[in-house]
Image 1: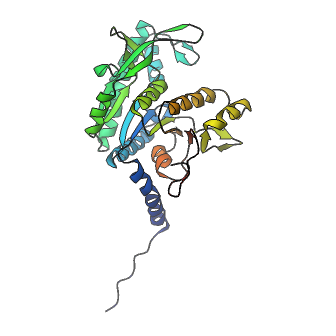
Image 2: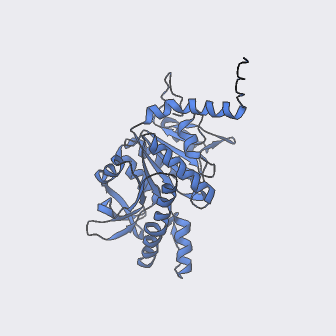
Image 3: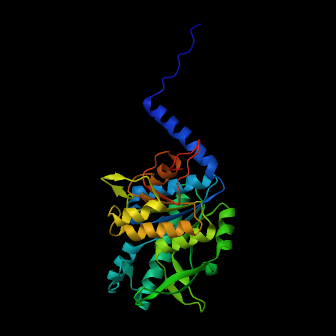
Length: 304
């Protein structure tokens, strides 16, 4: 009797095998930790990318990682405001929020956009609940002013995060999908910058990672993405013009977050399919990570 022929292993199968093997130590290491993900940019507008991003979030939750999602929605707010005849004004990249604009922000962020994201995750088999910073006083804020003293209207700066509420959802296996609104001590409603909201939440939770999903691929040097930026090098990069323009406040904000207790901050280009998984579950990653100091060991690469 002839022996059954051995199955032919294709190059694609070998590639999948390698990816799974590479991901295993990261899955083991991060089980039970918390990732705060800020979701914005083109990844929020392209249907194919939205579905793949929802798959990434669901997989992270299924392997035991607590996922907290904070979403932006600047383009959607501007579009809705235009339809309602309300002009959008910005100072230093931040939206001036009048009472009329606050109504648009609340309707867009905490309404349709928030629920659309929850629905995307649910379609992939994940469990998600849409909330805003108003729910159970999730984000307590005070009025934000620019360094010049100029007010942006109803724009808030986070003072306190209700971590018990977030922990309750995470312990139930649920992904909180947070619209960045907040209230002051009198219950007044404020618009909160999504990046700073995500940073405040990650810091309050002592998160393992804060991951920004946007249209920015990372920090470039001579046309190549820097895989890791260490705090001691960041000032030198800025002084020498390696890090310039709008990347400077992103880098400074990343290190403020690290100083507040978050272990790593990642900047990832969301226009790549499955960018989130590629960044956290592969040795090379695809974006830039920010760390206080280099941490090498025998089991995990510098991009772990």
